[in-house]
Structures are given as C-alpha cells and as structure tokens.
Image (cartoon, rainbow, N blue to C red; front, top):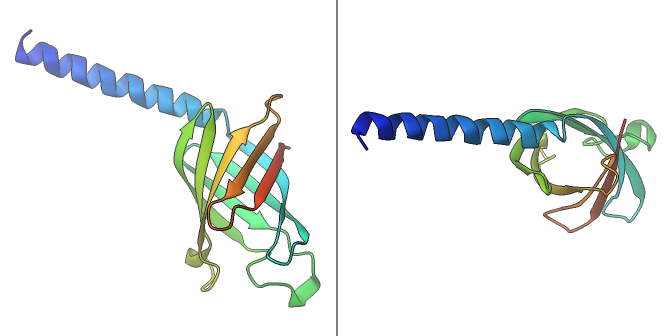
Length: 132
C-alpha cells in the first residue's frame, strides 16, 4: 500500500468511527424525566435533556424557596461516553452555582427503549428516567 492509500484508509476509518459514535449518542437524544433519592433518602425528581455530546440536567425544587440551592437551576451536561449499552454523563453544577459540584452519572437503556436506569458515580444512588 502506498502512503496515500494508507492516509485515505485512515481518514475513512475516522469518519466511520465518528458516524458510529453519533448514532450511539442519538439513541439517548431527547427529554427524560426521572427520580432519584437525595442524601436524606427522600425521593426527588430530575429532568435530563440530551442532544449529541451535551445537554442539560435539573433537579426539581420541591421544598419551596428554602430547598437546597442546587435544586432548580438548569446545569449543563457533557456526554463523556455513549454506546448502545451505556451513557456516561458529567453534570457541571459548579459552572452555574458554586457549591453544586460536578457529578458523573452512568445510565443504561431499559428493555423497552423508553427508560434509562443507572447510578451516580459519587454515591451509587439509583437514578431512573422515562422518555418524555
């Protein structure tokens, strides 16, 4: 093989890999509503919107104006990895409000394609989402 042929093959391989990644990510694109348990064991709501390599996450403010300050604002999300079997996200709360931190969540699709189930990496608490 010539040097030029190897370069063409390499570029084509990169293009195919990029298309495959985009297809995997598209499986999760959309809006999701779900539940998780907070540090006090209370069931709380969250919303997730995924679009390509990013999105948003918000924890529902359920306790009135004196609720946790990190509940309510919309935080940016970065898709760290995506495959047909798992979606790994980083929630960048710190970029919106000091003290809200960054959290990583790993989600897996349910059997019906309408649900995602996973855990927060920092505490192992379960998260469940349903496509809206």
